[in-house]
Length: 424
Image 1: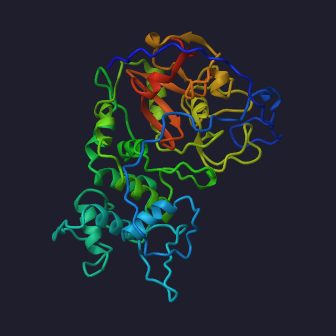
Image 2: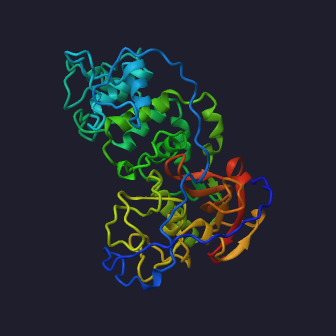
Image 3: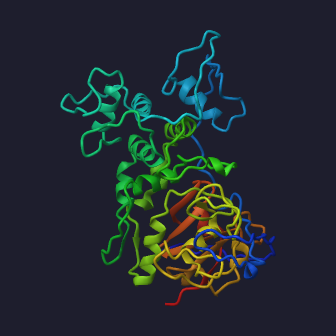
Protein backbone atom coordinates (compact mmCIF):
# COMPACT_ATOMS: atom_id res chain seq x y z
CA UNK A 1 0.00 0.00 0.00
CA UNK A 2 1.55 3.34 -1.01
CA UNK A 3 2.06 6.14 1.49
CA UNK A 4 0.80 9.63 0.82
CA UNK A 5 3.48 12.28 0.60
CA UNK A 6 3.58 14.58 3.65
CA UNK A 7 4.70 18.20 3.67
CA UNK A 8 8.38 18.90 4.12
CA UNK A 9 9.37 20.27 7.49
CA UNK A 10 12.38 22.04 8.84
CA UNK A 11 13.98 19.97 11.57
CA UNK A 12 16.15 21.77 14.07
CA UNK A 13 18.55 19.58 16.05
CA UNK A 14 18.99 20.48 19.70
CA UNK A 15 21.34 19.43 22.44
CA UNK A 16 19.97 17.33 25.31
CA UNK A 17 21.16 16.68 28.82
CA UNK A 18 23.78 14.04 29.40
CA UNK A 19 23.21 11.26 31.91
CA UNK A 20 25.56 10.20 34.65
CA UNK A 21 26.84 6.64 34.86
CA UNK A 22 27.93 4.55 37.81
CA UNK A 23 30.95 2.30 37.89
CA UNK A 24 29.20 -1.05 38.22
CA UNK A 25 27.18 -2.47 35.30
CA UNK A 26 24.75 -5.39 35.20
CA UNK A 27 25.14 -8.48 33.05
CA UNK A 28 25.58 -7.54 29.40
CA UNK A 29 27.24 -4.18 30.14
CA UNK A 30 30.86 -3.19 30.55
CA UNK A 31 31.82 -1.26 33.67
CA UNK A 32 33.85 1.31 31.69
CA UNK A 33 31.43 4.17 31.01
CA UNK A 34 34.03 6.65 29.82
CA UNK A 35 32.74 6.47 26.24
CA UNK A 36 29.17 7.13 27.33
CA UNK A 37 29.50 10.81 28.21
CA UNK A 38 27.19 12.87 26.07
CA UNK A 39 24.61 10.10 25.64
CA UNK A 40 21.41 11.27 27.24
CA UNK A 41 18.98 9.14 29.21
CA UNK A 42 16.10 11.51 28.55
CA UNK A 43 13.30 10.17 26.42
CA UNK A 44 10.52 11.98 24.66
CA UNK A 45 7.52 12.30 26.94
CA UNK A 46 4.19 12.19 25.20
CA UNK A 47 5.67 11.21 21.86
CA UNK A 48 3.69 9.63 19.07
CA UNK A 49 0.11 9.48 17.93
CA UNK A 50 -2.55 11.23 20.08
CA UNK A 51 -4.71 9.12 22.37
CA UNK A 52 -7.83 7.62 20.81
CA UNK A 53 -10.76 9.42 22.46
CA UNK A 54 -13.35 7.58 24.50
CA UNK A 55 -16.98 7.53 23.44
CA UNK A 56 -19.09 9.98 25.44
CA UNK A 57 -20.15 8.48 28.76
CA UNK A 58 -23.22 9.80 30.52
CA UNK A 59 -22.44 10.79 34.10
CA UNK A 60 -24.90 9.52 36.68
CA UNK A 61 -25.02 10.10 40.40
CA UNK A 62 -23.15 7.29 42.11
CA UNK A 63 -24.65 5.47 45.05
CA UNK A 64 -21.30 3.86 45.80
CA UNK A 65 -18.68 5.29 48.13
CA UNK A 66 -15.32 3.56 47.93
CA UNK A 67 -13.41 3.16 51.15
CA UNK A 68 -10.10 2.37 49.44
CA UNK A 69 -10.10 4.40 46.20
CA UNK A 70 -9.06 8.04 46.68
CA UNK A 71 -10.81 10.63 44.57
CA UNK A 72 -7.57 11.43 42.71
CA UNK A 73 -6.56 7.79 42.16
CA UNK A 74 -5.32 7.20 38.60
CA UNK A 75 -8.05 4.62 37.81
CA UNK A 76 -10.87 6.31 39.72
CA UNK A 77 -12.94 7.14 36.62
CA UNK A 78 -12.63 3.57 35.37
CA UNK A 79 -13.42 2.08 38.79
CA UNK A 80 -16.51 4.25 39.12
CA UNK A 81 -17.64 3.10 35.69
CA UNK A 82 -17.14 -0.65 36.19
CA UNK A 83 -18.03 -0.81 39.87
CA UNK A 84 -20.45 2.03 40.57
CA UNK A 85 -22.24 2.99 37.33
CA UNK A 86 -22.20 -0.75 36.54
CA UNK A 87 -21.79 -3.68 38.89
CA UNK A 88 -19.35 -5.62 36.73
CA UNK A 89 -16.54 -5.36 39.28
CA UNK A 90 -18.48 -4.60 42.48
CA UNK A 91 -17.29 -7.82 44.06
CA UNK A 92 -17.64 -7.21 47.80
CA UNK A 93 -20.64 -6.32 49.95
CA UNK A 94 -20.98 -2.95 51.63
CA UNK A 95 -19.37 -2.52 55.02
CA UNK A 96 -21.40 -1.55 58.09
CA UNK A 97 -20.82 2.13 57.32
CA UNK A 98 -22.22 1.70 53.82
CA UNK A 99 -18.90 2.02 51.98
CA UNK A 100 -17.53 -0.51 49.52
CA UNK A 101 -14.03 -1.88 49.04
CA UNK A 102 -12.69 -2.18 45.52
CA UNK A 103 -9.22 -3.49 46.44
CA UNK A 104 -7.45 -1.81 43.51
CA UNK A 105 -4.04 -3.35 44.26
CA UNK A 106 -5.33 -6.91 44.65
CA UNK A 107 -4.56 -9.25 41.77
CA UNK A 108 -7.70 -10.01 39.77
CA UNK A 109 -8.56 -13.71 39.61
CA UNK A 110 -9.61 -15.39 36.40
CA UNK A 111 -13.00 -16.26 37.88
CA UNK A 112 -13.77 -12.63 38.83
CA UNK A 113 -12.51 -11.44 35.46
CA UNK A 114 -14.77 -13.97 33.72
CA UNK A 115 -17.76 -12.69 35.68
CA UNK A 116 -16.93 -9.07 34.86
CA UNK A 117 -16.43 -9.53 31.13
CA UNK A 118 -19.41 -11.84 30.62
CA UNK A 119 -21.68 -9.54 32.64
CA UNK A 120 -20.46 -6.55 30.63
CA UNK A 121 -20.61 -8.03 27.13
CA UNK A 122 -22.65 -11.25 27.10
CA UNK A 123 -25.06 -11.18 30.02
CA UNK A 124 -27.77 -13.05 28.07
CA UNK A 125 -25.51 -15.69 26.54
CA UNK A 126 -26.57 -19.25 27.52
CA UNK A 127 -24.07 -21.76 28.83
CA UNK A 128 -22.76 -24.71 26.86
CA UNK A 129 -24.02 -27.74 28.80
CA UNK A 130 -21.31 -29.96 27.29
CA UNK A 131 -18.48 -27.70 28.48
CA UNK A 132 -17.00 -28.70 31.84
CA UNK A 133 -13.78 -28.00 33.71
CA UNK A 134 -11.53 -30.40 35.59
CA UNK A 135 -10.98 -27.92 38.43
CA UNK A 136 -14.39 -26.22 38.73
CA UNK A 137 -17.70 -27.91 39.52
CA UNK A 138 -20.87 -26.82 37.77
CA UNK A 139 -22.48 -25.81 41.07
CA UNK A 140 -19.80 -23.19 41.70
CA UNK A 141 -21.34 -19.74 41.48
CA UNK A 142 -18.64 -18.61 39.08
CA UNK A 143 -19.04 -21.59 36.77
CA UNK A 144 -21.64 -20.01 34.43
CA UNK A 145 -19.34 -17.05 33.72
CA UNK A 146 -16.31 -19.25 33.14
CA UNK A 147 -18.40 -21.49 30.90
CA UNK A 148 -19.61 -18.64 28.71
CA UNK A 149 -16.17 -16.99 28.54
CA UNK A 150 -14.61 -20.22 27.29
CA UNK A 151 -17.56 -21.05 25.03
CA UNK A 152 -17.18 -17.70 23.26
CA UNK A 153 -13.41 -18.13 22.92
CA UNK A 154 -12.65 -15.16 25.15
CA UNK A 155 -10.78 -17.26 27.72
CA UNK A 156 -9.08 -20.65 27.46
CA UNK A 157 -8.47 -23.73 29.57
CA UNK A 158 -5.16 -25.53 29.78
CA UNK A 159 -4.41 -28.89 28.15
CA UNK A 160 -6.06 -30.71 31.06
CA UNK A 161 -9.32 -28.71 30.89
CA UNK A 162 -8.43 -26.64 33.95
CA UNK A 163 -9.92 -23.16 34.03
CA UNK A 164 -7.59 -22.13 36.91
CA UNK A 165 -10.25 -19.95 38.53
CA UNK A 166 -8.06 -18.61 41.34
CA UNK A 167 -5.05 -17.79 39.19
CA UNK A 168 -4.54 -14.10 38.38
CA UNK A 169 -5.48 -12.86 34.96
CA UNK A 170 -2.52 -11.57 32.94
CA UNK A 171 -2.37 -8.58 30.64
CA UNK A 172 -2.10 -10.87 27.61
CA UNK A 173 -5.11 -13.00 28.63
CA UNK A 174 -7.17 -9.92 29.51
CA UNK A 175 -6.50 -8.25 26.18
CA UNK A 176 -7.26 -11.45 24.27
CA UNK A 177 -10.62 -11.63 26.04
CA UNK A 178 -11.51 -7.96 25.69
CA UNK A 179 -10.49 -7.59 22.04
CA UNK A 180 -12.64 -10.59 21.18
CA UNK A 181 -15.50 -9.40 23.40
CA UNK A 182 -15.74 -6.05 21.57
CA UNK A 183 -15.85 -7.82 18.21
CA UNK A 184 -12.30 -7.19 17.02
CA UNK A 185 -11.11 -10.79 17.22
CA UNK A 186 -11.07 -11.14 13.45
CA UNK A 187 -8.87 -8.06 13.19
CA UNK A 188 -6.46 -9.57 15.72
CA UNK A 189 -6.38 -12.85 13.78
CA UNK A 190 -5.56 -10.98 10.59
CA UNK A 191 -2.86 -8.87 12.27
CA UNK A 192 -1.15 -12.02 13.53
CA UNK A 193 -0.68 -13.11 9.90
CA UNK A 194 1.95 -10.44 9.25
CA UNK A 195 3.84 -11.55 6.16
CA UNK A 196 6.03 -10.57 3.23
CA UNK A 197 4.74 -10.02 -0.28
CA UNK A 198 6.09 -13.40 -1.36
CA UNK A 199 4.04 -15.17 1.33
CA UNK A 200 6.81 -15.58 3.91
CA UNK A 201 5.20 -15.49 7.35
CA UNK A 202 6.55 -14.53 10.75
CA UNK A 203 6.22 -16.52 13.93
CA UNK A 204 4.15 -14.47 16.35
CA UNK A 205 3.76 -15.06 20.11
CA UNK A 206 0.52 -16.33 21.56
CA UNK A 207 -2.06 -13.55 21.66
CA UNK A 208 0.08 -11.29 19.47
CA UNK A 209 -2.81 -9.99 17.40
CA UNK A 210 -4.94 -9.22 20.43
CA UNK A 211 -2.04 -7.51 22.19
CA UNK A 212 -1.42 -5.39 19.12
CA UNK A 213 -5.06 -4.39 18.64
CA UNK A 214 -5.58 -4.00 22.39
CA UNK A 215 -2.69 -1.57 22.58
CA UNK A 216 -4.03 0.37 19.61
CA UNK A 217 -7.46 0.82 21.19
CA UNK A 218 -5.95 1.95 24.49
CA UNK A 219 -6.57 -1.03 26.76
CA UNK A 220 -3.34 -0.37 28.62
CA UNK A 221 -2.86 2.66 30.86
CA UNK A 222 0.35 4.67 30.44
CA UNK A 223 1.50 5.38 33.99
CA UNK A 224 3.47 8.45 34.97
CA UNK A 225 4.78 6.29 37.84
CA UNK A 226 6.39 3.70 35.61
CA UNK A 227 6.98 1.26 38.46
CA UNK A 228 3.25 0.49 38.00
CA UNK A 229 3.63 -0.50 34.34
CA UNK A 230 2.89 -4.11 33.46
CA UNK A 231 4.48 -6.49 30.97
CA UNK A 232 2.40 -8.70 28.65
CA UNK A 233 2.53 -11.68 31.00
CA UNK A 234 2.27 -9.73 34.26
CA UNK A 235 -0.61 -10.60 36.60
CA UNK A 236 -3.00 -7.65 36.62
CA UNK A 237 -4.20 -5.81 39.71
CA UNK A 238 -7.87 -4.93 39.75
CA UNK A 239 -7.12 -1.30 38.96
CA UNK A 240 -5.55 -2.29 35.64
CA UNK A 241 -8.43 -4.62 34.83
CA UNK A 242 -10.89 -1.82 35.61
CA UNK A 243 -9.09 0.49 33.20
CA UNK A 244 -9.00 -2.09 30.40
CA UNK A 245 -12.66 -3.03 30.86
CA UNK A 246 -13.65 0.64 30.96
CA UNK A 247 -11.74 1.38 27.76
CA UNK A 248 -13.25 -1.61 25.98
CA UNK A 249 -16.78 -0.76 27.08
CA UNK A 250 -16.46 2.87 25.94
CA UNK A 251 -14.67 2.17 22.66
CA UNK A 252 -15.95 4.50 19.92
CA UNK A 253 -18.13 2.85 17.28
CA UNK A 254 -15.80 3.99 14.48
CA UNK A 255 -12.77 2.27 16.02
CA UNK A 256 -12.80 -0.82 13.82
CA UNK A 257 -12.81 1.19 10.59
CA UNK A 258 -9.89 3.31 11.83
CA UNK A 259 -7.79 0.14 12.15
CA UNK A 260 -8.71 -1.31 8.76
CA UNK A 261 -5.06 -1.55 7.66
CA UNK A 262 -4.47 -4.30 10.24
CA UNK A 263 -6.55 -6.72 8.19
CA UNK A 264 -3.49 -7.22 5.96
CA UNK A 265 -0.03 -6.41 7.33
CA UNK A 266 1.95 -7.17 4.20
CA UNK A 267 5.58 -6.10 4.09
CA UNK A 268 7.81 -5.97 1.01
CA UNK A 269 10.12 -8.88 0.32
CA UNK A 270 13.04 -8.47 2.72
CA UNK A 271 16.49 -9.97 2.97
CA UNK A 272 17.56 -12.05 5.95
CA UNK A 273 18.91 -9.19 8.08
CA UNK A 274 15.80 -7.06 7.63
CA UNK A 275 13.55 -10.03 8.35
CA UNK A 276 15.51 -10.42 11.59
CA UNK A 277 14.65 -6.82 12.53
CA UNK A 278 10.95 -7.52 12.02
CA UNK A 279 11.06 -10.78 13.99
CA UNK A 280 12.79 -9.06 16.88
CA UNK A 281 10.30 -6.19 16.94
CA UNK A 282 7.34 -8.58 16.87
CA UNK A 283 8.53 -10.22 20.08
CA UNK A 284 8.27 -6.93 22.01
CA UNK A 285 4.80 -5.83 20.98
CA UNK A 286 2.89 -5.16 24.20
CA UNK A 287 5.88 -3.96 26.24
CA UNK A 288 5.16 -0.71 28.07
CA UNK A 289 6.16 2.82 27.18
CA UNK A 290 8.85 3.70 29.73
CA UNK A 291 10.35 7.18 29.55
CA UNK A 292 14.11 6.74 29.11
CA UNK A 293 13.62 2.96 28.80
CA UNK A 294 15.85 0.89 26.52
CA UNK A 295 15.96 -2.54 28.17
CA UNK A 296 13.49 -5.42 28.41
CA UNK A 297 13.74 -5.98 32.15
CA UNK A 298 14.15 -3.82 35.23
CA UNK A 299 17.62 -2.28 35.51
CA UNK A 300 19.47 -1.31 38.66
CA UNK A 301 21.65 1.64 39.57
CA UNK A 302 24.60 0.11 37.72
CA UNK A 303 22.93 0.24 34.33
CA UNK A 304 24.80 2.49 31.93
CA UNK A 305 21.87 4.56 30.78
CA UNK A 306 19.81 5.28 33.90
CA UNK A 307 17.87 2.74 35.94
CA UNK A 308 14.33 1.87 34.92
CA UNK A 309 11.77 0.25 37.27
CA UNK A 310 10.33 -2.16 34.71
CA UNK A 311 11.23 -3.46 31.28
CA UNK A 312 10.04 -1.19 28.47
CA UNK A 313 11.01 1.43 25.94
CA UNK A 314 10.44 4.99 24.90
CA UNK A 315 10.59 5.70 21.17
CA UNK A 316 14.35 6.19 20.87
CA UNK A 317 15.02 3.45 23.42
CA UNK A 318 13.14 1.03 21.20
CA UNK A 319 15.19 2.20 18.23
CA UNK A 320 18.28 1.29 20.27
CA UNK A 321 16.84 -2.09 21.22
CA UNK A 322 16.01 -2.93 17.60
CA UNK A 323 18.86 -1.26 15.71
CA UNK A 324 21.87 -0.25 17.82
CA UNK A 325 25.13 -2.18 17.61
CA UNK A 326 26.75 -3.17 20.89
CA UNK A 327 29.44 -0.96 22.38
CA UNK A 328 31.55 -0.98 25.53
CA UNK A 329 28.63 -0.32 27.87
CA UNK A 330 25.45 -1.39 26.06
CA UNK A 331 25.03 -4.83 24.53
CA UNK A 332 21.77 -6.69 23.94
CA UNK A 333 23.36 -9.52 21.93
CA UNK A 334 22.21 -11.81 23.41
CA UNK A 335 19.26 -11.81 23.66
CA UNK A 336 19.09 -10.09 20.27
CA UNK A 337 20.35 -12.51 17.61
CA UNK A 338 22.01 -9.95 15.31
CA UNK A 339 24.73 -7.37 15.82
CA UNK A 340 22.94 -4.16 14.83
CA UNK A 341 24.28 -0.93 13.32
CA UNK A 342 25.96 2.25 14.46
CA UNK A 343 23.54 4.34 16.51
CA UNK A 344 25.41 6.04 19.36
CA UNK A 345 22.85 8.82 19.84
CA UNK A 346 20.17 8.18 22.48
CA UNK A 347 17.35 10.67 21.82
CA UNK A 348 15.29 11.09 18.69
CA UNK A 349 16.54 14.67 18.34
CA UNK A 350 20.17 13.53 18.27
CA UNK A 351 19.49 10.42 16.19
CA UNK A 352 17.99 12.66 13.52
CA UNK A 353 21.47 13.64 12.38
CA UNK A 354 22.83 10.09 12.09
CA UNK A 355 23.27 8.19 8.81
CA UNK A 356 22.09 9.27 5.38
CA UNK A 357 19.06 11.52 5.09
CA UNK A 358 16.10 9.92 3.28
CA UNK A 359 12.97 11.54 1.88
CA UNK A 360 9.49 10.10 2.32
CA UNK A 361 9.36 8.48 -1.10
CA UNK A 362 12.76 6.85 -0.66
CA UNK A 363 12.15 5.06 2.63
CA UNK A 364 13.22 1.42 2.87
CA UNK A 365 12.82 -1.16 5.61
CA UNK A 366 15.38 -0.56 8.35
CA UNK A 367 15.34 3.23 7.98
CA UNK A 368 14.68 5.35 11.04
CA UNK A 369 11.68 7.68 10.67
CA UNK A 370 11.63 11.01 12.50
CA UNK A 371 8.64 13.19 13.37
CA UNK A 372 7.91 16.69 14.61
CA UNK A 373 4.83 15.92 16.68
CA UNK A 374 4.17 19.39 18.06
CA UNK A 375 5.32 21.25 14.93
CA UNK A 376 7.94 23.29 16.77
CA UNK A 377 10.65 22.57 14.21
CA UNK A 378 12.33 19.94 16.38
CA UNK A 379 12.26 16.16 16.10
CA UNK A 380 10.50 14.56 19.07
CA UNK A 381 9.67 11.03 17.90
CA UNK A 382 11.38 8.17 16.08
CA UNK A 383 10.47 4.67 14.96
CA UNK A 384 11.88 1.98 12.68
CA UNK A 385 10.36 1.58 9.24
CA UNK A 386 9.71 -2.01 8.09
CA UNK A 387 8.10 -1.26 4.74
CA UNK A 388 4.75 -0.74 3.00
CA UNK A 389 3.65 1.92 5.50
CA UNK A 390 4.47 0.00 8.71
CA UNK A 391 6.91 0.68 11.52
CA UNK A 392 8.05 -0.77 14.85
CA UNK A 393 7.01 1.97 17.25
CA UNK A 394 6.78 2.81 20.95
CA UNK A 395 4.44 5.71 21.68
CA UNK A 396 2.92 7.00 24.88
CA UNK A 397 -0.70 6.97 23.65
CA UNK A 398 -0.96 3.20 22.99
CA UNK A 399 1.27 2.95 26.08
CA UNK A 400 4.05 0.96 24.48
CA UNK A 401 5.38 -1.09 21.62
CA UNK A 402 3.25 -1.76 18.55
CA UNK A 403 3.48 -2.46 14.86
CA UNK A 404 2.18 0.94 13.78
CA UNK A 405 0.57 2.01 10.52
CA UNK A 406 2.43 5.18 9.49
CA UNK A 407 1.36 5.41 5.86
CA UNK A 408 -1.38 7.98 6.46
CA UNK A 409 -2.76 10.06 9.30
CA UNK A 410 -0.75 11.52 12.18
CA UNK A 411 2.55 9.85 11.29
CA UNK A 412 2.48 10.90 7.64
CA UNK A 413 1.38 14.41 8.56
CA UNK A 414 4.17 14.89 11.13
CA UNK A 415 6.97 13.10 9.24
CA UNK A 416 10.20 15.15 9.10
CA UNK A 417 12.68 12.87 7.35
CA UNK A 418 14.21 9.42 7.45
CA UNK A 419 17.78 8.29 8.16
CA UNK A 420 19.45 5.21 6.70
CA UNK A 421 21.88 3.33 8.92
CA UNK A 422 21.38 -0.15 7.38
CA UNK A 423 23.04 -1.02 4.09
CA UNK A 424 20.97 -2.36 1.20
